[in-house]
Amino acid sequence: MAQMVPRGEVGPEWDNERDSSPPQDQGGRLRGNMSRYVDPPQSEEQRNQAPGQGPGDPALVKPPAGDPPRRRKVRFRRTRRLYRRRSVRIISAVIGLFFVWALFSAGQAAFKNNGQGVSANLAEWARDHYLGPVVTFGEWLSYNPPPKGGKPAFSLAVPSGEGITASQAPKGASSTSNVKTTVKPAFVPDIPATLKSLAGASIAGEGQWRVVEKVNGEPAIMTTFLRDATYTSEVNGIASIDQRLVTFSLRPGTEDPGPANWGVPDYIPASQRAGLLATFNGGFKLDSAGGGFYLNGIYHGSLEDGAASIVYYKNGTIKIGEWGRDFTMNSSIEGVRQNLKLLVDHGQVSSDANSDVMANWGATLGGGYYVWRSGIGITKDGRIVYVYGPALNAQDLGQLLQRAGAVEGMQMDINPSWMKFDYYQAKGKASDPTPEPLLPTQQPSPYSYYTPSTRDFTAVYAR
Image 1 (cartoon, rainbow, N blue to C red):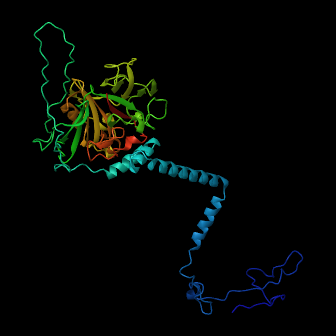
Image 2 (image 1 turned 60 degrees about the vertical axis):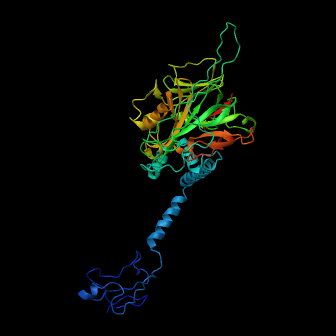
Image 3 (image 1 turned 90 degrees about the vertical axis):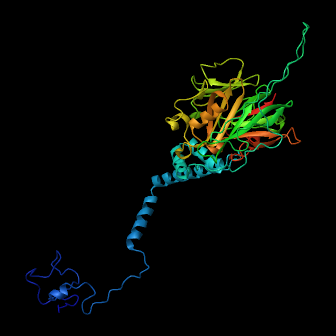
């Protein structure tokens, strides 16, 4: 064992190999009450023992199993020290305020009472805030292509009393004298021929026209259904409108084109529902439409040459064609709505209807080609035809317009949340008619245009 020297005394001898005298301060005195300790000799086994393993050593006490590691405490201390920095606190506050604002803004948009639904409103909000790729990716994950084959979920049969077929013009009164007459010629209804099915043999009611609106006892709006050629359980709706009996009114949206002194409301107020016959959706959001919007002397964007255009005249009629070729601005024009390029031109479907679909005809849910699409066209005799359906690509939409008789036609909006065609039944209340959807499978509420609409649309009134 090593010798211990009592405090305050000098040991009898020191290790000569290290120092021949005890340590002293500058005055020659011993440095403090120091003691000399010399390690005893140890065997190899004793040198390799860990602390607490040798004889007589105190046993090591293990920390409780539930105590967190000391390293984690160090990490937390570092985090707290980092957060004490002023710059870090400022950046954290800015990020927090941003997320609060984003949640508030998205919540307001999602639950807006505009008939579109929460998912559609959120998608629109995200695209307006540069999150389009995120929305597209989410839609891609949720997109399910339509099933091939099958039967429609609802009957296409024509209700009793609504069916109508093409008829010959009534013969006018003949005169055998030279006496001039002022008798007004009889009105000849413009009733299109029955349409052939796209899916082969027709089922009951398919392609047969029915009258849903009359003006002065004459058929003003007729509708029919055609199944899809491939996805035969999916049904497309078609409407034919006689311009001699109706007037068209372009309406702005609260967000697209947005607030301005447009001269007409962005919905159908109670005071303007008398004589209302139909409403239908507009085109793409204007920042994606490849054209502009004009109404009562006010522009949103510029009207682009070459763009497909619906031109609304002050006499209540409309025409469809290419801006700069078929129309230029003049005093008789009340409104113009442009969207992409013509899908049907001179009776022929565009040759690139199936090429580069996303770029030419719009981004769809999940990038699917067969989705809800809508279109509008004009026939050789001036009838307006509107078509839409749940499983159409651009080529199918063009062929549907062509089959309905359009010589000029254009795609309108796509994807289910933004397209609808409703007609209005008086049902004893001519001043407050009840809207009915052309397709029972359309998603937006038929009452949605009775409240402010975020998108532009068209209202059809009795002339």
